[in-house]
Every structure is written in structure tokens, then in C-alpha cells.
Image 1 (cartoon, rainbow, N blue to C red):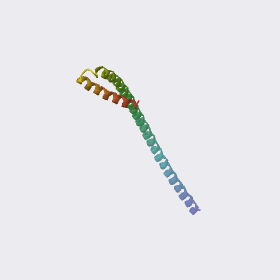
Image 2 (tube, rainbow, N blue to C red):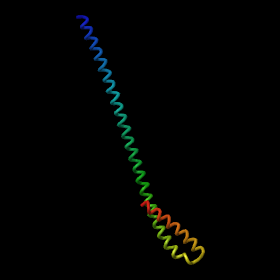
Image 3 (cartoon, one colour):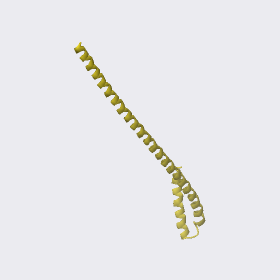
Image 4 (cartoon, rainbow, N blue to C red):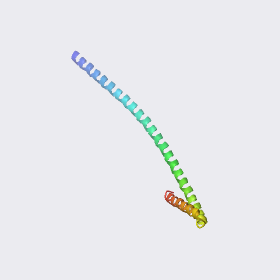
Amino acid sequence: MDSRLSGLENEKNQLKFGMQSQEQEIERLRKGNSKAEEDLSTLQSQVWDRDCVVTEALVQEWEVAEHLQTLAIQADVLSLQTESKSNRGMKLAWLFKKIKIIGVKAKQYM
């Protein structure tokens, strides 16, 4: 009877130890899960911020391209007006044509 009682006591202690180990493992996993959720939230915020910056950059790029197009049109008009007047006018016309080329290239990004 004592040996049987001793065996049950030993089994009880083993089960108690196993249960404590499992409880510790559960707590460790909960902490890890909480940390992972915090990390995910931080990463989502960083992605959102990056997306906002990229969107703003694209908007600015479109605005610059539109402005270059306007300058190209103005340069075309001015080059027609100044092309035949003088050597300085010819240089100015050449400059305006360069601006027009830049505007045409910028149009590709719109």
C-alpha cells in the first residue's frame, strides 16, 4: 500500500511539474504573440507613412510635368516671335526649343 501511495504521489508530482511547464510555455507564447502584434502594428504604420510620402512625390512629379508642358508651350510661342529678329533672338529660340523638349519628355510621366 505504501509503495502504491508513493507511486501515486510521484505521479502527482510529475503531473504538477508538467502542468507548471505548460503554464510557463503558454505565458511565453502569449508574450511573444503580444510582441508580434506590436511589431505588426508598427510595420503597418511605417507602410502607411511610406505610401503617403510616395503619393505626395507622385503628385509633385505630375505638377512639375504639367508646369514643364506649360513652359514648353510658352517657349514655342516665344521662339516663333523671336526667331527671326536677331542673333540673340536665335539663341533664345534655341533655349526655348530645349525647354520644349524637356516638356515633351516630362509628358511621358503624366
